[in-house]
Image 1 (cartoon, rainbow, N blue to C red):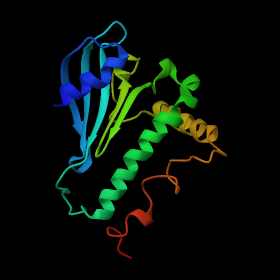
Image 2 (image 1 turned 30 degrees about the vertical axis):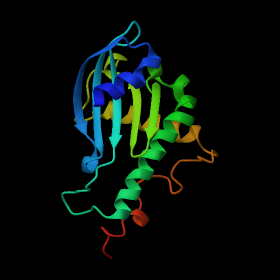
Image 3 (image 1 turned 180 degrees about the vertical axis):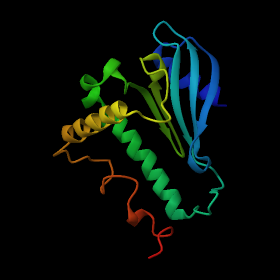
Image 4 (image 1 turned 90 degrees about the vertical axis):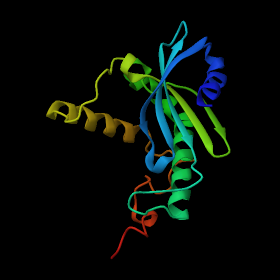
Amino acid sequence: MSRNLYREKLCDLNIKDITSIETIQSLWSGYGKLVRVAVESEVHSNLIIKHVNLPEAISHPKGWNSSISHQRKIQSYNVELNWYCYFSAQLQQDLPHGALGILCEHENEGEWLIVMEDLALKGFPSISSKATPLQRSACLRWLAHFHAKFIGEQGNGLWENGTYWHLDTRQMNWKP
């Protein structure tokens, strides 16, 4: 099923065929998966697809599977889609190799696809499990620049309180 959906959505990118699909990881609480798709194309060899597919039965290892939690996750995916569609392009000039390249998106009831370039092919082949002081410094500089770039923006369609993580979203988990 996923292969057909991916093939259909990737046709606008002149993808001739999908040669393999590798699951990188599942998304929290069974809400989908992140996959690397190897493709036949003159422009791309691999793409990353964040495939959100709302589960019929919601589960969480610690029992945090309330309707509030479910709605928060749905809002989170909508915020992420809005970020990529309406804000990420403002950072393209500041990133090496246009690293935030969202190539296409798809939204249907209970399902989202966000198709991105594979950063491993854009000069970022490894993931550091323990950052060096130089790497931490570079990350903090980039984050400071990122936040400065958007000072004064209304952020329509993004989080009203800054992020997904704040106490108002965690009433069931927070016990005073």
